[in-house]
Image (cartoon, rainbow, N blue to C red; front, side, top):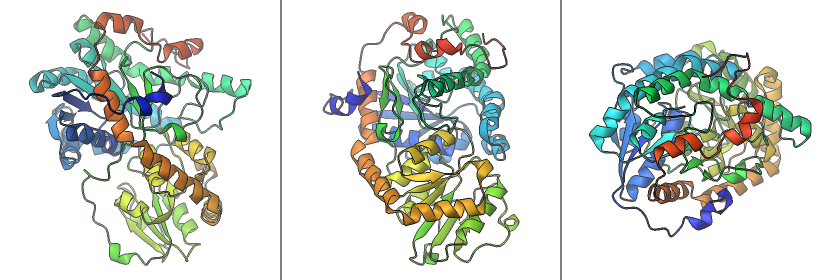
Length: 472
């Protein structure tokens, strides 16, 4: 099935009745918002949905009106996620990614392989939808012979080398030098995968699962790998695996915990909504720079969502045109916004485009450089690298994007595209179709794979790290 054909082929299919589908997401706001929206969509079609999560995810999952089943309660008691992930708040660039995969992800995967099989047995789940970034936890459904699909809530990785990996903000170019740079950049995937391999390998050995660990495709779903990125917002990738599907944003504007806001303070002036997300929010210098920049636009009003890691008292003078809050009702504010200043998180970028709002991006880490590159590539905004960020530079970009109507025009074109993409319906259609198809025998799947990554990555020897250490 070609990715470009899915929107015309999935509609009108016969839905599979009485499915009991388990969901598993990283315990982080951006991932949970998109995964719970997809779970709600499948539940609305009559399927039973069970959402597995550590205790800290319970309020988000229950607010989405989904069945919550806890696991890893001893390893991750209430409050542990904020405590553990708070360590990344002040990191940036590849340091954020490396800390996450070395210090945070192995514990989640280790606890997952220990407890998830029992929870699956207790609930009677017969298929799984797994966050793609939950690296190698798919070894559990492989062992249990359960069909599973993988979801990219964040910007997906392009393993072809046609475009830069999303961890980099390199410009998209098609020269031989640029392709060689992109391919060399893929070597970091071995480094990201390496801390989880011994955990998954040990689980497979204990349970008699035969996996070719030298093959980076070995555990990738053969059924479907779905990204909420619309094809129109991606960079051009000429050669995609057959089980890779573009869908569109997983937003339903419902099912989230209510966020109070002082709506009476809005004056009706053109609104700038600014947020640096929920994780990398310890950079007080970034917030101070934003405040100095937006203070130069008294004709506009600003709402700055600060997050939990910076004390407003440490920010210095607050411009008269600015409202500061810890958290904000983001979608509701974007509906009123003329501009979004963003960290270029995938969900925020897609939510801004869904409202036709152009952006000025300040990417810090994770997939944000790749999202920022796409914002600029498609003309829906501009971005400034963290090392080049000054109040003067940021104010220039604010003026450029708000004064040039082409950014708003292109953002509104994307608004129309996203409305018509029906991302949740497309993803749900794919899931229903592939879960209803005959499944391959497990041993064939893990030994042969579908060349999702291997056909592209073997040329860069992804099973070796950049510092020369071997991954086994």
